[in-house]
Image (tube, rainbow, N blue to C red; front, side, top):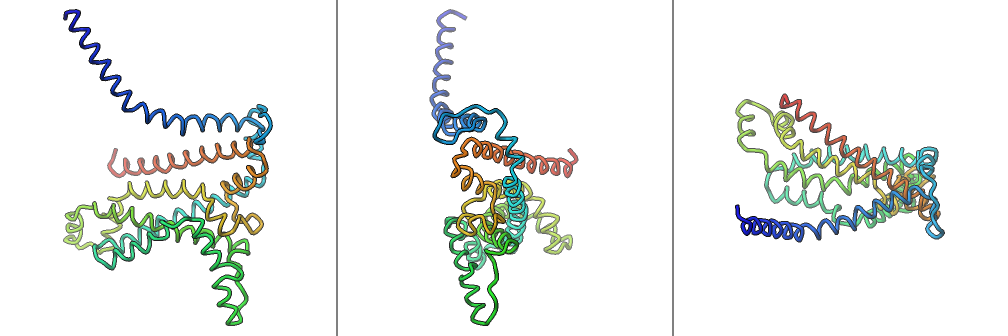
Length: 302
């Protein structure tokens, strides 16, 4: 190969490299500025005692040690675990049942799908205030009970009832998103499989359990991860519905970070809590996905 040919090929490769960098460069730069840099700053601040005003002093892992010794953090994680576990199970379970019941194409089914999804398009803060007006001590339900001489129910002011009410509102507000996901997945199930199951004498329940649900299992996994990670970070409904009360019985970990740690000028400690929350969310998402992949491999004999 002559010198001019090698030079021409080299210039062509340089042009291709320049074009590639020009196409992916802005995205990489944006990702770096919006994600990598903030995470790096957060990691650094989590190792300091910064209060948001004075100069930050490096204290190593003291914030993380305090996180595990802090009773308020332990209580908040307990509430968060209950909300995430029961909320995810109910939203995915009810969403799947609802989608299976409304999988046929009809105007009636479309209407009920829209009804289920409607709360998801409304701000969670607004939904929280709405249900606070319904479930509060002087809310619509207790006012109605009072007319019949029935004592008010502490939906939001009894510790046990408040947590149940919070989970119920979260499930009501979020399961419609799962309905949409599952309905879309159900449309991809081959009709031939359903016809074959019907010919073999399988009932609708058997077909759903043995054919349909295994076919949409990857979508169920995605929904589980999205709901689980979302509920671990639950904050807005907590603020507007219960405010973390009564007596901290509905205080989630995210609420603790934003309402107490940051407001108490414990920015370094709050950042350590946020970093820990990010790690827990990532680990849980990876764990659920890994378990799903293992089940798929076992089912296929891989």
